[in-house]
Image (cartoon, rainbow, N blue to C red; front, side, top):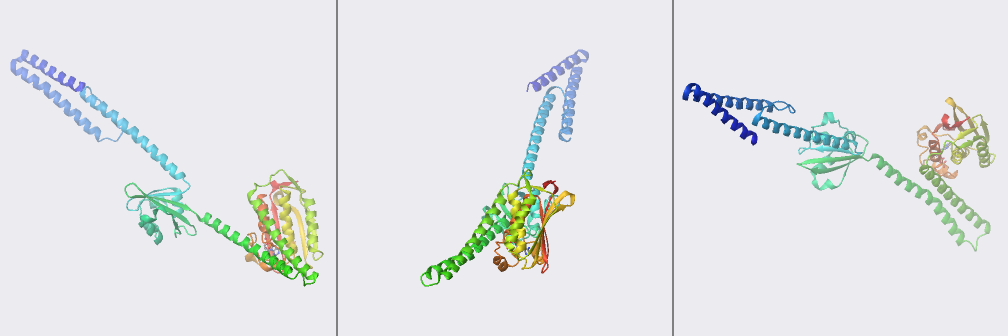
Length: 434
Ligand code: ADP
């Protein structure tokens, strides 16, 4: 305000001075001409500065304001300050938006923003992966043109559903189960959250199957045990003791099966929850194999030819208890699935690149190729009846697989129906102590 007043007073004073000078030089006419000249000069200066202001307003953001003295100088200074402030605010807003985007990218779930016409405004990488879309191509397209599953369209169209997630299987990402949730927000926009729940669903199914399997496995021996005990109870007074003894013996046999099943389940659960075995504990393989060979001979009771070949390194780094259980399981299976008169070879030897291999070869019933990949699943048996008869729980190879994984080793199975099988545990060099 002061600057404007100063400029006005200066203009008036200069006009008066010029008029006075004109008066002395050429009388009234001179005074009028001089005054007009000064007023004209001031008018043209204002016009020139307005033009510079208009030109500046058309320049790109961030162009410095024109410089001038007096009132216009004050105007340009004020504009310059405002331009700087707004540029700083814009910069801050851009940084915040960028931070928000990076946070949304880092979310473990997919996030997508739809405008009022259901066109994609933005999506993060997880949303791209879940829906099988590409932000660079699909941004701007309507989601309803890209995902055409009727249940998805119904879900988007029905505001009542929006608190509840939708389970979606889309052709854009076959074989995956998605959980989608829509939340409306500002100006008709919709926030879509999407999560891949395939793995969670698989786990839930596995858990359900596992409980059903365990219940089924326990139910049969329990029913048989109860049956024999009740029969023995009823027949106690009028039945020969040898018959009662037979009932009790059979009941005890079934109870032992249940005990074996529960032992195997506890072993599996311990293997799943324990941390991997340490690398520092050296296991004396020769002593362990001699023990296992004795056990296998006892189990076979002279029905098979059993050979032990030990040509491998003396020690393996790992857990004695776990390795013993895995090796004994493989050797026990060879006895149980090899008919009388067959042969079994237990072998410990060196493997390429200084690893080691424990193998059990039998001349038993063998396994058809379609079963091989599933043998280590819990309760998977080629022949359920035969496994039960042989006292199997269906958990042996699942235990072996877990133990080997915990020792960074792999299980290899070669088999031919009618000719026999070879199960090998192959250990990496870092587990071998020479
Ligand atoms: P099980 O307690 O039934 O033996 P495992 O997990 O040890 O359970 O083995 C799973 C299945 O693999 C067995 O039921 C059997 O059908 C098959 N199997 C395992 N070892 C052998 C083998 N040496 N010869 C033939 N079949 C075998």
